[in-house]
Length: 170
Image 1: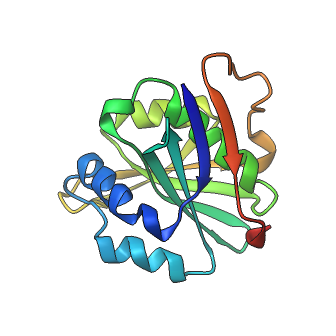
Image 2: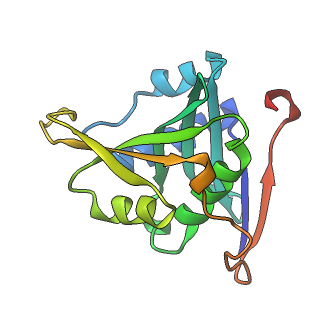
């Protein structure tokens, strides 16, 4: 299986929007919100492809040395295959020289996501009451850059992974 992580382009918006709708039925981003990300100088946008098909995405804002993982999703049919962990690990490695800390919000009930984030070294630092549109609380999780687990030991034998990025955001 060939897996490629690359910067998102505007050609990816429709696929990203569809994954977003399938992943976040209640709090999905609008297509306009996704398109707006391309105009924000502090927004870093990535997709993960399997055999040339976009199967996941992430938007990260970097402000004052803090990387805010605004949204992250793997298409439901591609979950539980290690792609989410690999995708996040590569993003963390790629952006760790631009930030001192990574933070994110996650639904308190989203145990698979919390488990994934914990496996990468994130820890819960606080809870936001009634954060989501249905009233559910969010957990705020963070990871300090010096605590990022190395990708060197991560098993790669089952997929051919490449990370591509344009040079204009270094």
